[in-house]
Image (cartoon, one colour):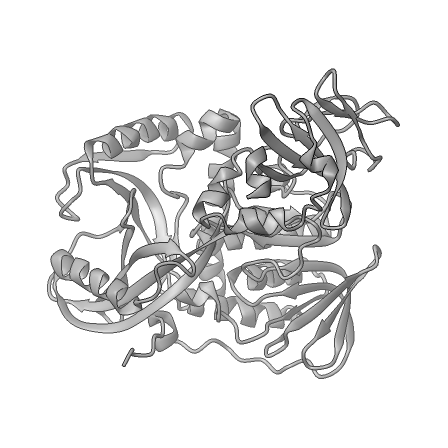
Length: 511
């Protein structure tokens, strides 16, 4: 019989409980979700004197926050060279600064509120198993050095045993995530926030000026601003998150080791993923090992096999006296490895934070900081960086399609109304079609690539017309023009590109 699983964090700390909401209320800002993102947002808003209410379907930290590794770091794999290559040095530097702000927000808040969560500064390492990976690490080291990050490049350190070399970032951190969020929740309520558990949002109604959330308890909450901090967003707002997020599942164990091992946090650059950290509990060193990543729903037929592999790794690492916890967690990934934090649309008071790519302790904290700024002051220096409307959000849509093995493609295709107009679409032609009941533009290029775009101009939402000569979608009102290939803004007053609904081969539409 399979043993029940519960994370080490839940074993050693109970999340604080709050009553269910039993009467309808009106609030300035409503937050849905009681993980680190939602509670951080509640804390930041309450600190700024805003009226804020948080509802959680279960208990605080019942999702990914209570099942994480508890690492707080700006080192998110070998990410910075990729960001710099794609977006430029300034963009990469801004990403590093934003994550550093979040890391030090956690550190400073722990000190300010005296939260007993075992927050400890350490060095975070990404390690290579092959020479090719180490070469990529050397490139990453050059990149982070150019950004002002003092990275440590270490050759053949001997730990873990298959380590060919590693890149370290000093002054990173680890903590007990539930104890930290409990401390934030207490401070939030002390500053005037309201928290309700066992209160699930079942329907969201948005009329433009306010939002009303209907709850499972039969009551409603009316708010001017809404923050959706539920891991996967419970409200889509036509952002088609199922095309922009893919789920990954990881497994974790906590063991009492037989021998010592070097200080620091470690993560392998390649599969099979192995993430290692130390936690101190009542003077005893606990080894936390996480890994065995797979697409959710594929590879989880025998969860004990995943735990067995992690235990085997822990034995090779430091020996195992006792396995004291087993658990699993789910994260959501984005195609460009940058989270979505911000408004659902440019003029909206509906906000989303999701897709933290397994780095939700700093990412969720940053989201709370950013969204509180956007609500109170209307601006934040990182808004464009994490925008849901950033121009290249689906420049590589195949990433999502590959990760979910074609399921997403089938789901998107089901929204296309396959009329004769689509079947008869010639190369170089664009047409207005229906996608999920709404107007969209479909274009077939000379190489049989299909692109389906939202053809509401990003300037003032005027419907665009197809320009065959220029292979563009053009605005008849103010002259905005966009590439039919990928929605890129070409000229005119619009500042944002068009949203991509689908990119695939023409033949894929009819399989």
